[in-house]
Length: 454
Image (cartoon, rainbow, N blue to C red; front, side, top):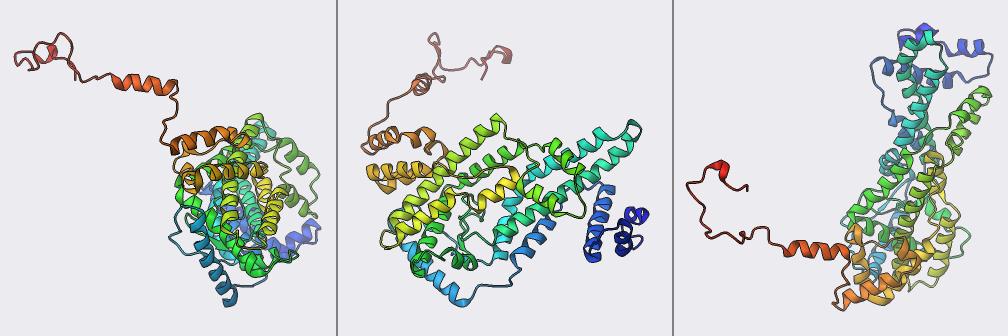
């Protein structure tokens, strides 16, 4: 059987024989699938392929997302299209950020998986690499000296197996998340392609249960919030990369807890495979955050709170005509504050607690700015990264408001030391002739080595 396994398809492995040999009650079809993945891993290691099969994550996620087989009905699509059309008009009154170039969409759960999986892959890849490295290191450390040459070859296999294990976990997380998210921006990070807005009708119906809010009002609020989120990321094209890079920087600092890995291996019961899955999905193999990661997390939370606060204020202004707008807004805030599907997803994938704890303070800052200088000046803060409010502005927006009011009056802000030094440097004219130059005409008789440098 080992020879057939290493042969990668040269012989057929009898899964029933393996099940009988191990004394475990294993489904032969499941065992055959496991053997095929292992044979593929061996052949990949033999050919030098050390990549991660993200196709496995996609298949797993789509399998979970499409389990109920439900699609989007024409009636649901029509109702949400009408909500998007009216929300577009209302947003134009609340913000100067332009409309989307692409029309909003109604997505199935499987469609949401296909649209967002590339970003999930980008966020999870640093941790997948860390898991693969940890498995390889453990194999090398625990093997006897006379087997180190064999271990070096097996290391490529362990990287492939470890990466594929994590890819399978990613598929589980994204597939389960597809059953909960209501819209493209529901997670709080830019998962959808730039300039794309979407609502999942299958999950929208569940979101409104128990709220006792008319469905048309709920659809208008969700559509307005989704369009505001998509407009912001389309306008500030640097913002998408800014958010994703901060998450991946945090993820690169994640290292697998090898002691937890050893403990799991020592007590792992093959008849209870759910124990391994639960350990992976709960993030039990990820150690406590380092001080550097805590600082990175604080920066990321401030950034997400700034984004979510702006979206909330703009949505609040745009939906002021809805009688139930306040109730819906409070439901959205509580859902996010309690740690929604995004936090569970990123918590298990990269150990990141993605909860905008300062969203209320950030929303208060944006309201103060709007009241002082209006939506047009407020929205210019998203034009460049260095204009965006920071943590100090969230704590006390008075200085930010004063700067914006001075700019609106045409008053130049007080120069700082850098501005003074830059002004002094620019006041000097490096192209001016020297004081002792008596003639501007170059000397034709001068040799090249005597000529002044250009």
